[in-house]
Length: 341
Ligand code: FDP
Image 1 (cartoon, helix red, strand yellow):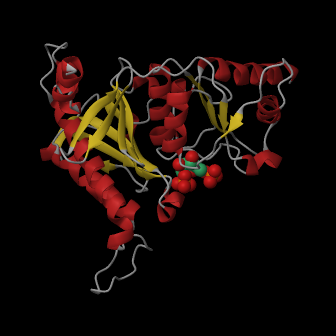
Image 2 (cartoon, protein in one colour):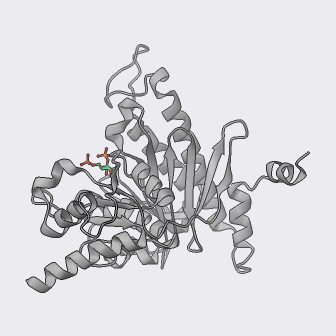
């Protein structure tokens, strides 16, 4: 009998236990972060269940359409947003919420306010919803300076000021990847227990990868360094093998693969979208935070992504993130371009 294996199977490290363990290293902590996280986890479980049932329950469809009972249907992303907003407000630990779904930030009413602000995309990769491809939730957490007088400047902060970041991927399994600033850990939802169990401890991204991930349909509009980099991936001149292309078109899924297998994910600026497509606060920052915590890098084409100071809550930025050496190559190409100018 494999007693060691048995111990592993019976001594389950749930995400709550994991965060409580981390908290015990900070004697001054009063458990507020653990409470906040448990509300985020609840939101993820709800969305996971809704995504799994979507085809059956006819949750898919245009917001505003009515179902056979004559009730108004909610699109999955609208529903997910409502669930997260309500879970975060009711945690009593949040102050400002910025969601991809809402044009304006939500300022939590004073009686329910706490010291954290959460920036999030409740259901990222929405163009993949209707065909059952992996989608996800992305979130980042900041600490507020004055919870009795919160302003937008409390969330318009560089990504390096985040306390924690993570994503939950609704795919063949439901996986939550989290960093509280001391490495990256992955938890998989055990549906029979309804608990996220630590399955990917201390994730480290390979130093160099064999995969590049980009929407090549935009190639005609790319700038010089991006075009040169992708050309190098396909036709390397140093005798190395060409890289493989993988692009799901769902940031959570593409970044998750990059984190586990290594390589690079690119969403560059182009002539049509000079600031790129992805949003700084709830796409670029959380994913860059995780990449750095896993030993990789994240670069905007101009600077370290986490140094960027956003001026608007829905601001966009180009992004290149992944294995350390791969991002180093694209940085060198942008540096060479800058020298020419
Ligand atoms: P989507 O438009 O499906 O919501 O930011 C949203 C996002 O997906 C990312 O998840 C994804 O990486 C990217 O856009 C895909 O964009 P393209 O379709 O332009 O490749």
